Amino acid sequence: MREQPQDLQSRRVLYRVLQALYSYPLSREKVEPLLDLTFESEPIEMAFASLRNVLAKVTDWEAFVDRLNVEYTRLFEGPGFLPAPPYASYFLNDKRLMGPEAVAVRRVYAESGVASQKLGRAPDDHIALELAFMAYLSDEIADAFGQGDDDQCKGLRDVQNKFLKDHLLPWVPVFCLKVTAATQNEFFIELSSLTLACLESDQECLAGIHDEVSRVAAR
Image 1 (cartoon, helix red, strand yellow):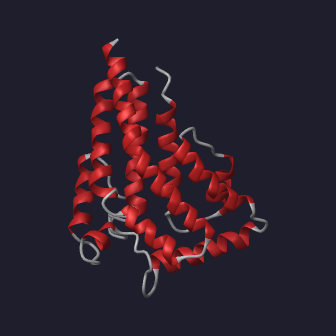
Image 2 (cartoon, helix red, strand yellow):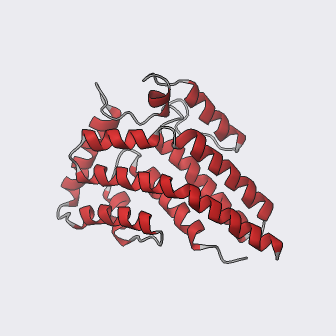
C-alpha cells in the first residue's frame, strides 16, 4: 500500500470535523479534541488556529457547550426565524426549502451509493449532510490511492470536484457570511471562517491530487 499524500489525510479529517460541528447537538467530545489538531495547509491552519484559540479560553466545558447548543438552535434550527438557514435550497431557491437543489444532491448521493442517514428527517441539502458526503468521498479517494487504484481515485476526485463546484460553492460562502453577521459567538464566527477557508482552498487541493495521481500512473 502506498503512503498517502498529507493532503489526502488532512482533507478527510477536516471534512469530518466540519460535518460534526454543523451537526446538532454539539458536545465536549466533539469540540475539545480540536485543541490537538493541526493542518499543513497554511490558510486552513490559520483559520483553525483561530478556532483553537477560542477553545483554549474555555474553563467550564459544560457551560460552554450549553451556550453553543443554544446558539446553534437559534441560528440554524428555530423555532421561528432562522438568521442563517443551513440549507442550499434557501439560498438557491428563493428562500424556499426542499427545492430542486435538495432533489439534486439526493440524486448525487444515490449515484455514489450512499443515502442520507437522516433521510425523511432533514433535507438532503443541509450543510452537515453535504459536508458528510465530501468526507465520505475524501475517505474513498484516500483508500483508492492507498490501494493503488488510480482510475478509481481519479473518478472519485472528479465526483468530489463537481460536487464542490455545483453544490457547495454556490451557496456556502453566502451562508457563512450570514452566520458571521448574525452572531457574536466567537466559536461560530471562527467556524464560518474555517468553512470558507476549506472550500476556497479545496479546489486547488483537488487539482494537486489529480497531478499526484497522474505522476504515479505515469511511472
